[in-house]
Length: 280
Ligand code: CA
Image (tube, rainbow, N blue to C red; front, side, top):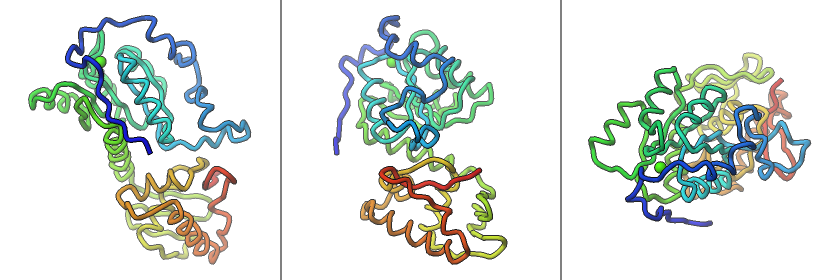
């Protein structure tokens, strides 16, 4: 497992670099707003039959003008099964945010034109609720407050470990997910996220907390395939003793309990890829 410490060369000069049209080239064209989100991520799933089942954890928008920083971040997050889109200026970021729904925004503070704080303010003013993680070389308390006042959810000061970035993103996703309460329903199975009860046609099935969390996660993301490793990362984030075998064991337990109520096919195996719950 790579553990990369990322120090951006010359980050002290941040903010002085002009916007370069050429630098944007790798992302433009392929990633214009006219393109359907995620079409350029064939590396995640190469089998076209799985077109509707791309196993990604979250859609992440990276807004960063320095490509020596944004490209490694994009590659790192893509390897961690996120679906990543990259833009290099604030105006384009706002355009993308109007057109598409993301799960997390990684927003650099110092951008040419509209800076990160301004992007954040405008996005929130338009009613955008997506969690925002701001990247900055600034670390004074005042600056941090200014960003948080503008609507950022968390902060990461450059230079940072890419692992730290992933951890912050996972934390934001968990926070957002726990804020979404209510009832999840797939076929005859109902999961109440507040009372933490699962029932099939009104009959309750008892799950221990980890089983419940795993089922909840899969039901929150119907028709998406998750590998055992991705599930481990999302549902077992703080448990270092668990492995992908742990996930497989829990899937077996879930299936057994569900099968007792006639729901043996709720959790599907996609061979060579992972697990999913199908919802019409
Ligand atoms: Ca920058």
